Length: 251
Image 1 (cartoon, rainbow, N blue to C red):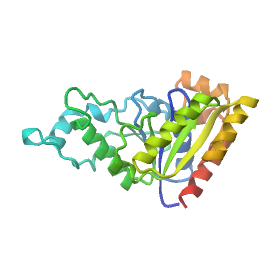
Image 2: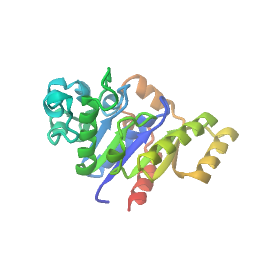
Image 3: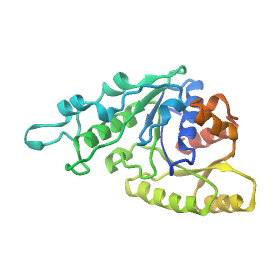
Image 4: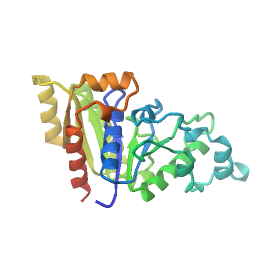
């Protein structure tokens, strides 16, 4: 495998940040250069990877002003951003570069505001230049535009057992197809062996690529509450199997 670019999506609380952190750790331990980007408005990925005080890129107002805005209210669609990840990422003990996009204050400037242009340019640069890239997204995958998403290899949807998760999965699938991501894999998290959970798994297996099943684990909940990286306390075998399936999907 030369490189892999993943966007991990799912509604709040399903465990996508845990998956992003554990996959980042597994790839890094195998010797890959890993960049993990938190694209969620509720910033959790840095603590899940054992770092703090990461500067949100959306807060770099002076830099955004200098590189994006032009006279007469015109924006540069491709501002210079090739130095941004190195300058504003934090590395954890395993050398994983952790980046936080931050939130976009749209105000009266519409969706294509300077911050949006800047963050999408950073993502485009990361997608086409990083070795292993893991994006911890919101369910709406708002930061990914059509042009940005073209370099993403796989959209990983994380769901919990329950029919509402299937509804969320359908929405994520539509959004990803709309912006040009063709490969979609599903991870079922917080699995408890019962009839309801098995029903969801059958639905997923029928319509999607099932990447793996992660059992319900109190250790993961405790790690999240105590801001301990999940890979330090949990059983990594389910996550390693998911990583192996992802690699096969891009080979």
